[in-house]
Image (cartoon, helix red, strand yellow):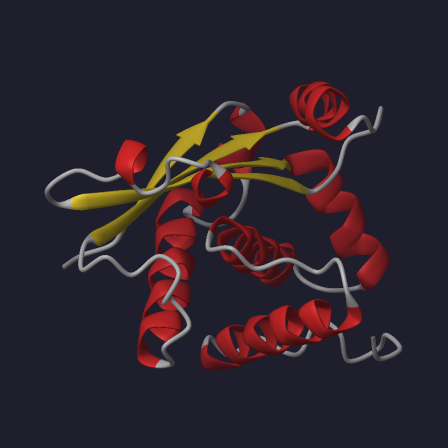
Length: 175
């Protein structure tokens, strides 16, 4: 079984970054899925199939539009996740003989850049963190309660640590 992230570049600004963003996104996806599988965290999505998801690398304009429609928030955000697991017909409608499709994510370059500057972290590290966060949402994780947030943050910290990235919550108060 191999896991696959389909990356769509909707804003050319992503291609001007000093790294191969498509390859990096696929590496982050692979690391996250491997961690989840090794730690039994993929039970809600484990149907013995390869896992696939989609990532759109976009901008504030597009993300703001989607955020307004789907979350009733008239502002851009860093990443939006649209999880197929939330559909009543999951996995029937999102699983074929070989692949299980987790869903779609869209990330805004401008918001990512602003947040990285504010947090004084590299764009690459912030990108990895947000992508791990989005993948966890696609996998059924959420942060509506303190317990859920703590569980999700712990997984994020562990995956990022495995990739050599510092704890993104180190300077924040605990949940």
